[in-house]
Length: 271
Image (cartoon, rainbow, N blue to C red; front, side):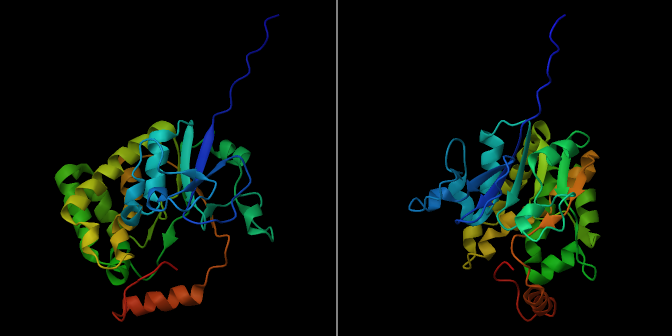
């Protein structure tokens, strides 16, 4: 009797973007990835660096974790690819109450189970409740950046404008540049998203900002491009909770938001 053929399990690699030493998930799902490595040759974290192969590592001051996303796009060939952050991970649906926050992070086999019925996994939507996506950004950063993104879409990708406008009026969105996708969809999204950002960069040079935090506007705007892409194509997805290895200082976040909302002080750092 012929030996039964054993089907190969799909490979899944999720990069963990970091710029400093930090505890990493031990599960084989994860690839610790040093982002902005080209800007810090003196720093060796013993992680995969984003300055090998085809890369934009030297643009990290403007693109933030997207230099890691770009590296995954161009250099990793897993069946499914994704990105998380050293301070933000996808949560397990099976281990949500462990005292060790790292035990709450999803592992390879559970992720494979979800991907067996979904081609895309995203983080649960962030809800601002009293603000729209546009008004929150206008209060905390610079609304001109969103306006420019819409202009770029109108000129180059008009089929996405309706979904962009809908997101701007919404009070919630999938943020953080966190997702896992089947490789062809991952590549498709990256090709589109980076082309939008490149067109924006030509019109609004990040170097024109004196403040390094504001110069990273391309990374922030990119977070709002995921939902218009999903909606325009009608792609379905699974949502997972976000787990932070560190307790979130909600008092500091709330105070910063109120100061920005009432025109006292825009954001000048991440919370």
